[in-house]
Image (tube, rainbow, N blue to C red; front, side):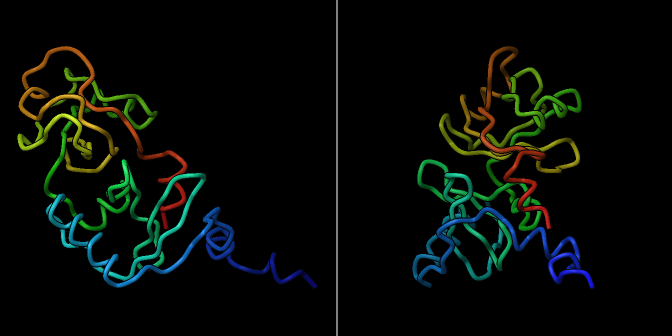
Length: 174
């Protein structure tokens, strides 16, 4: 007879072995503050029960048990999967098809590849990068203002901090 561990479906086995450490529920008040911050900053309607955890040294949060957020500079932000699920409307940068391959391999976003950007973006803001079909590709830190990103013909515009295909994205993909 096969051991029980080998009889479990792969998806259950995979997600039961995630590398989360210090996973714990958070107070309703703190959860409400995180949700309000994300909803106002990104213009989405995130809701659900939140848990905090660490993943390979990064502070993250789970929404209804799914890895959908991370902390950047001690502020909450959605992962690529979280943005896809909750439909963010603010703080976006749209790139052309030629830039996609580089971005999902971890490269920073260069200004010539930017087609459009939210003009409310200020230098230093955390932003999300999408393709022409509005598919989230990455999360990063703006290195220039939104208007400047659109007008610039050279230089780095966004520092890539998390992208489709990285470890965080793979662990959040359920």
